[in-house]
Length: 193
Picture 1 (cartoon, rainbow, N blue to C red):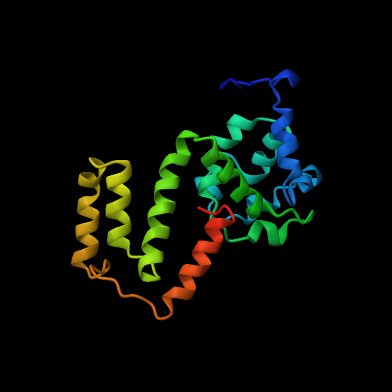
Picture 2 (tube, one colour; picture 1 turned 45 degrees about the horizontal axis):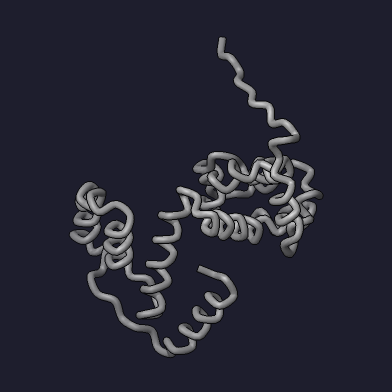
């Protein structure tokens, strides 16, 4: 027989200031309308890889569990497909709120956000340079920034992809890259990574 471990969160442990900050963001107050139906979790194509389901994240937000939410892998696993938001009976902008939670985790320098920030910045730099992602550059720069020794462990996978023609060594610039660079600059000015 397995035992159930339960952690009780007392009202004093709730971060009410953070909760008000969440409710103050555009669409954030809609979290109060969440009926915990699970439609978001059932619609999510990557829920299998999440620590907590999206509905659980919203329950934790409503409980003022700031650290637990911002340290969760769920906010980083979100595929940004918007299926959850499109199907939510309460019309909660779930994906947009996940983005806001990611930005909060980055701002507060939460441990999981460091690798995500390195990946995001590397991706944006490469796209800003050529107009498209280049997997070899992305993997190499990301691994060097986050786990240089881990690059050796990943080398066999990269070599196998390369030998099967699935990993191009070169990248070409897209036409009209200046327009794309303006869009990226505008997004960064607005607080995007």
